[in-house]
Length: 206
Image 1 (cartoon, rainbow, N blue to C red):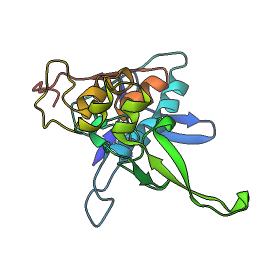
Image 2: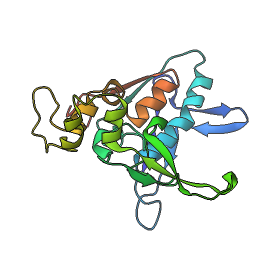
Image 3: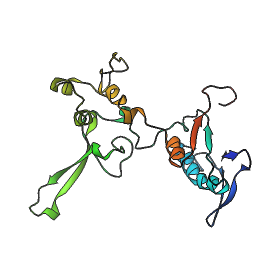
Image 4: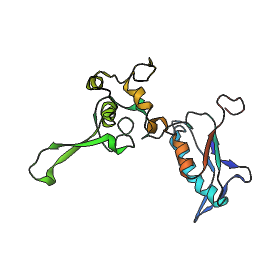
């Protein structure tokens, strides 16, 4: 398969970025015996690679990167602030862990000593993700102490009018969670360009 970014004036973009020759086209060989399956991480890597090429060909220009409604194009970064991916209670995590327990806000983590050696240099620690309950407590969002322990992680989509039905819905209304962008959108806008999605279910775009 071919994944390619084109611009109206050049079509397939080609040129040098520094001393490296680059093109906006990637040839990918899908299948279990080849390169597996095209995923969001592949698209992110390609986009990160071609933005400097666009900048070199179009100095001082702002690009509008257009994508269809593919799930790969709307996928979130691994460390995205998504309440539905969070535990209610604290869990131990390791720096090598991916997925649950790996979020970008460092205030969501604490280090606890587990080896009480006499000498400071021999102390050992474990890292914990504080969970939704801990984050809500950290942000002083419980109305009372009873709610802190009675609130469930999920209401199974039986939401109340004030969205205080469960920890997930309360957290999803927080600005940093509500404004979480997709991985591609973060890359594009972080590079000073614009990100757009084609209309959903448009017959000529999807």
